[in-house]
Every structure is written in structure tokens, then in C-alpha cells.
Length: 377
Image (tube, rainbow, N blue to C red; front, side, top):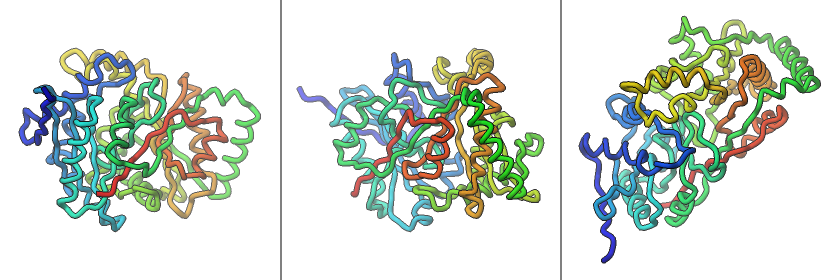
């Protein structure tokens, strides 16, 4: 008797709960997967709470195989992406699936049909729900858990997407760096000389995040962010509300020692954002903070010993001046001072040669690769 596979559109809260719950079952027993907090996933999918949906659309589906949930996917129309890049690209995201190509094909069909209805000619993913969020599919480094806001998936996912005809669009690189480079006195002495020379030449002031003026600081970050990445592949400017939404979620874990601004006469020209890897604190909580998970979270938080360097940006007129090396130097020194074991720098586009060269000169090396796929539809 052939397997019975049904595709169900998620149109109720009860189905959405099942959609959110599916990965917790799928990854059971996988020691490298880190369970996301359920309320974070729920908020990310909530069209009323997440301001991304003020300008974009999403539709969700689940697959059932012989009556048991076997996969899920979202089809996404990002109107701001298409307006900014002047193209017709739809997206898939929140993809999870058992190792069954019949199931994955049907799920991809749904996402492709959805974006095609809105006139799209390309299906791209995974992005959940945009390139300003968690995106890319892990294609190597499966033996290590993900850091915060980075994806993790089984190795067989690569076969599932390629079976459907997806091709590589772009690789996103994750570098690993250790504060132990501080012990390289020759390199650090050279880095200090270069940093001080650049600060003097450009009349820079380097300062840490002011948590007491957080809302204004966030707007300064947005000003730099939307200018710095304007020419980058896949970039979409974030709205004021989107930036506030993201900043609010990160405020609780931000450490001012790892967040810096570069300013000239009080005006921001660059910033660097690194955060303690909160995944180390939520791993093992099964995605729940209540009723007892919060106590464990607070205890685990004290044991965090690594960072994720999320963003390092400079306005276009100040790029290629070496200012990013100042940020790296300061993060390395702060991490060493606080006894951290290392940091992931992610993600960096595979063809961002300037950033790759800077990180490699500091002793960082690629240890994970994430891929975004395209398929003409």
C-alpha cells in the first residue's frame, strides 16, 4: 500500500502550533540542534506582531505522511526586496522535513505555486522570513551546534533541495576566531599601531553602546546599517519598525563591551555588534522558559563563553579605510579580558573579499558554510 501524503495549509492557531512544534520532534536526539524558544518562533510568524509583514506576505503549509506530520514550509513575498532590487523573487523559509523527497517536492511545489501567483519567476531560500533574519542552509560543519540566530539542519537537506532543481545562489561564510591571538604580541602590536594611526587620521571617536540612551542608539545603528549594506547581494533596507522590533529582542542580552560606534564629530560612520551566544543558555530548555526554564536560563547565561559577531558596518564613504580592524581589535581584547573561548563571525558573503581578508589576517578561518538556493519557476 503506497504512502499517503497530504499537504495542509496552516490557517488556524492549532495548526500553527503543530507547525511550530514539528522541529522539536524531528531533531529529537540530535545533540547539535539548539531548540529555539517557542515564543520567539511564534512572534516571528505573527503577522500582527512582526513588522516585516507590514510590507510582505507569508503562507504556511505542513505535510502529513500516513497521518503523521512529516514536513513544513513557508512561502514568502517580500515586497520591499522586489522594490529595492527590481526583480521578481519569491522566497521559501521555515523549511523542515523528514528524509523523503516525495514529501519535500510537494512542499516546494506549494511554496513555488504561492509566489508564482504573485508574479514571481524565482524561488529563493531558505530565508525565515528575510535576509535580515535567519537564513541559509548549513552545507558543512554539521558536527557543531549553531550560534544564536544561525540555522542548523540535517545534511540530507542538501539532497532534498537539489532534487527539486535548486541551484546555488550564494554562499554565506562563518569564521571562527579565538581571543588567544592576543598572545601574538607582534601581531597585536602592529594592529594597535595601525588602529591608532587610523583613529588619528580619520579623526575618529570609538565608543561603546550607551544602554541608557538605547532608543537613540538603535536609530544610529539603523542609519549606518542601511547605508553600509546598500550594495550587498540580497540586502533589503530595514524599516524603522523592523529595526525597533529586532533591537527589542536583542536588548536583554546586549553587552556594551561588545557593541561599538565609530563617530566623527558625534556623527556615526560605523558600528560593530557582537553578542554573547545566547544559544549556550537556551540549549536543553526544550524551547520553554516557563515555568522553570527561566531559572536554568539565568544559570546557563553565566556560563556563556563565546560570542557571535553579527554586524560590522561602515558607511560607504568610510569603507576600505581599515576602521573594521579597530573593531576587531577591540572585540578580541574584550573577549580575552572576559575569558571567552572564541567568537563566530557570521555571516560574510563568499565574494566579500575585503572582509574575508581582514578576518583571515586576524587569524580567523572559515569553519561553517551556509547556502542560499535559487530555482527558476
